[in-house]
Image 1 (cartoon, rainbow, N blue to C red):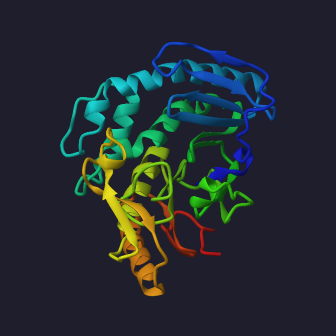
Image 2: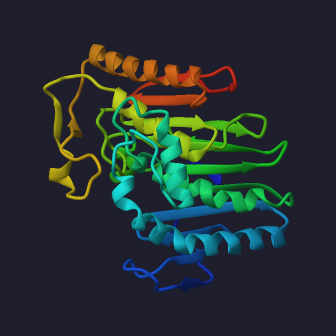
Image 3: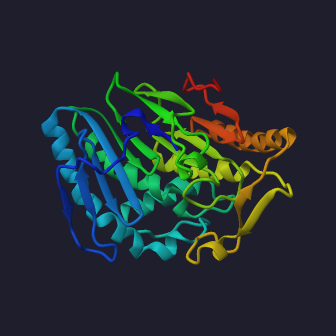
Length: 315
């Protein structure tokens, strides 16, 4: 899971205030200002950490406008959930702005199975970061939606992003430090970073521990990370799979087999799986659908990048 280095601490202690708006079955959206000045917005499965640098009045105004938009986001998505769980195969008449972002990010991947849900976290982050981009007094900002990140970078600004290659460490609470990091500068065509893999929050058809993608938007990165992670795959008796709908009854994946457990693979199998994922990532780079990817499987790393970015390597 990528995190901006300013967003490692996501604790709720020290919040100066909390606002509750009971407008949905989830108990209403909540927000809290953390002790270090960042904000935490939460509503049902949407869990955002927001950081910004610049003129404080401009930041305060962006926070308020983003909060107003955030309060309607989940209910808006749920109202179109049946359509968002359908495979992307032909144009559809989605009404909500976030839903349309999701569909557009997944449209270019429609030759394979994908639903707009593959881009939901990134699309929410994209929808809210625009309020920070609207004011030139805000120098930089990030919208971190559970590890899928939308960025605002004024000219000359940059963020260093920390990488957890093994998402299992988070579940095991073994978070002792980043596995690596990389820089996103304003001059780069990257404003979105997202991670997918079988160890993450969502189901995966592949066996990647993680795939982190850099793209023009967080929604684009989210969709591409999902598809590349699905491609990191081999057949092996030590891989356990199960129909997605036997693990979660409302999944958009139906009875497709998703990865449940991956035992120790041979070096050849690891290389073969990473090669399949890297090939897919390279194709997406050539098509301009993303700009870089970091693929991780059982301690081995593969990096793919376009000529538009530099400084991304296996080191």
